[in-house]
Image 1 (tube, rainbow, N blue to C red):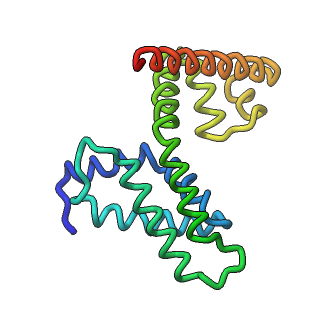
Image 2: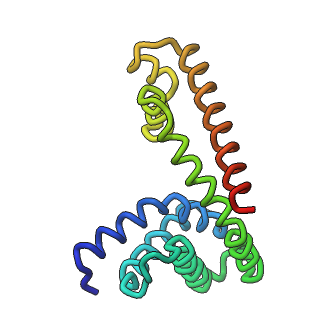
Length: 178
């Protein structure tokens, strides 16, 4: 399937924003992380091939989750002999519960992004080193020329500030919606 450059950019952007969420979704339905990785890769190929059927400005996450769910079912059919296999009814229940909670998690994700944007550059850098680059506190201390104790305190304050900001943002959103 040939896609225009703008469609390709849109697909890549939407997938990048949702990839971790989709990976976690698939992992809830299969017992082995390596299987979840394989299923997610297959789902990405299906998404790419079917992207011309996606309606822009609709819920990409829901569309992608449906494709992932179908890929999980296809995987199960191929591997039905696995003794740790979940029943179709169980998987459908999990998928329905995730769909039911999707709006809540998407609101929390938006609130987190807004709260992260409010942090100063130094705090965003500390979070980036810890959670995106996966550095240990010792490695961060060496890189930032700070003590590990100071970094633990800083991370604790940043996490508390984010928690408070997210809680306040969600409360304001709930108040606006009512």
